[in-house]
Image 1 (tube, rainbow, N blue to C red):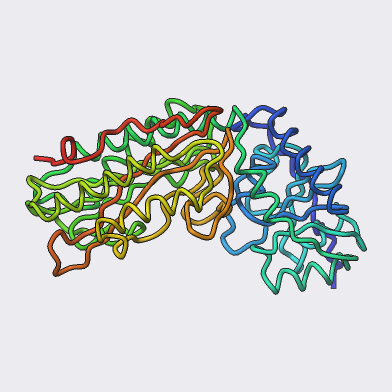
Image 2: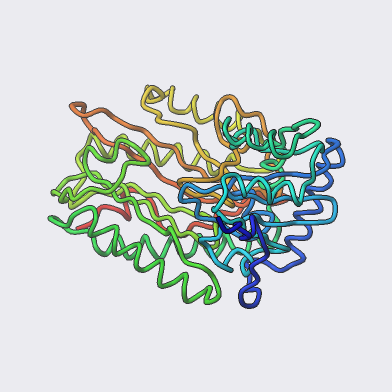
Length: 404
């Protein structure tokens, strides 16, 4: 039998480095922050495996399709570990070096990781992402002296945005408004949810390509719900046709180089009945109260308590659906979360300048009750030195969003 001499892993530098979402100095600053965490925790190397951390520190956003991916960061190196199916794209789209692992032998991914990180080291890992089977393979191939969970500290680093990140998020908010306008124009009695969503999605994708001609394009989407489908914030599209008097929920989500922004609005088709108008007006008032509370020094739990009190006074708190807002950045519907910056009762984070957070109260009235449906308004705010800047421009409320 002929001996198999194919490599377990190798560099695949096909083509030139592509423009990344940010300048090299931005990634160097992020890596410097991570290396400070490593020094403080006594970590020799970090083995990052999540889409959000790999994208944040290297610029490369992987597409797993059942394969493992990683980024190994040492005091001197930053190396993306990617699958052979991706060709040279990981090299082109990574800040730093890249290794491609082959799949002729099981666990070549971990052999590549071990080649960079070295055996017997103290390793930083993402305890909220590393599966039990992956950890077993890591222990077998790297024989670490210890594992240190670093996901909470990397999330805290990510939720403090740089000026370059804020500039990208601003553009994303503008694109979301463009998608919202296109979707609003497509709303008509008899139109299907998916028809309205496609109009908004197409408008955003075209605008992203115009603004970012060197980017990769993926995953921009719209959720447009009507009638009972509005009861959940993340309900998928259907072919339900809009009827007169329906409550509508418009949600546009442009994705730019892994960065998520959003616009979410309540609308009505043709007319709004008195019971629905009362709930809608109350949710708008809660939204405006929340906007006024976003400022440096405020706590997530404190803001939540104030809005809770407001809704309780109106006997509406029992209809609140979820927390009142969350952080923005490297985030999408299937990766990323900076859970330390969510407006919930159990989060005590103090808001700081440079943080970016949404205000998005939602009330869901069950079917069979007057005013049934889900009501939600959503704006994005940048926390400043003295308050907050609202970067969402699409209008909200009954004066603007009764369509037809």
